[in-house]
Image (cartoon, rainbow, N blue to C red):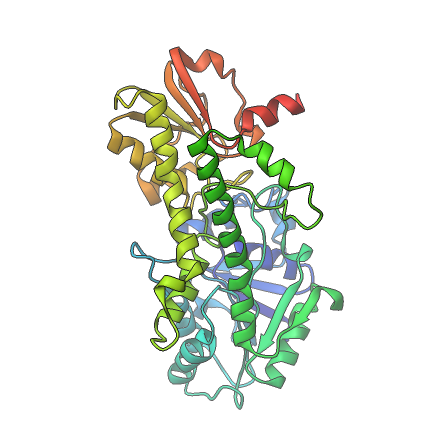
Length: 420
């Protein structure tokens, strides 16, 4: 590693990575989002990732650019942290990954290292990214430059875990690449926080396994929630009773599964397996079954609201909590938007209240207006979607119309009361 590195993609992951490395080395951050780059230059973080008390100090060793050709030619390390979403049909979209690979290839030279952090299906780095790098640079991977894969594993939100708090998986195209990737991340993490994978495919599949594990287990708890609601059994009592068993997983419960990891990554493995006709059987696909259950939950919650209002299709409903998870500002792939659409389809006048959400992002992504200053009055129904006590910063009873109802999907009011 030379005297500086380049981080390609400066979102939630790239920014944290840049801040970690800038304590040790000069960092260049490249992102095609001009508004984001300009905001960072001014010390404004719309992602809510970092609290900037002193922008000049926080960014003293970071330079932001919108064009990779603007970074110095002596940089020999590039870390790609671009999004890997799915489209409306849940098909993996590698547009950003391919575009970033092409951009890096245009400035790639002998002796360079390229590391990918984005979540992808097995063999994507080797069979899609490397060929792009080779074709557009005219260089040969393994001979002229090195490639590695080290999946991001950060947990967003004010109560999450950052890059320096989570063991980092590292892998390489070959032995030399692995050694360089290990040395790179060893700059910011000690040996006991680094885990070497034998191949890049192992690291790629490990990242997907992490999130599929949670997705399938949440789907299981969602199924129990459906059973409990159907037959009038208290889910919380059932869960707490089951949790008295020493090996019961108490870390997973029911909920709407959104975001850019758990609600997305399983589709990369589903798509990967579906291409193997001799292996794939939809009837035996536990991943797809889990996804169907979890995708169903926003509609199920909308039906609960509809039933609570007498199935009239009339009235004012306010959704409290629009981010994809508790204690964060990120609205990407939030299932609260699906709930919003279902309620509109039922005919209700729907408002959204979330003082923490990135309202600008939500407007761009979903064309919805999020109320953040004050909770609306005269609600026929208030729906709490997240177990985030900081959302309940108002007198709930005073915000209800006469005869209004509360649908507390995640028991946030009980939690708030117990803390108070």
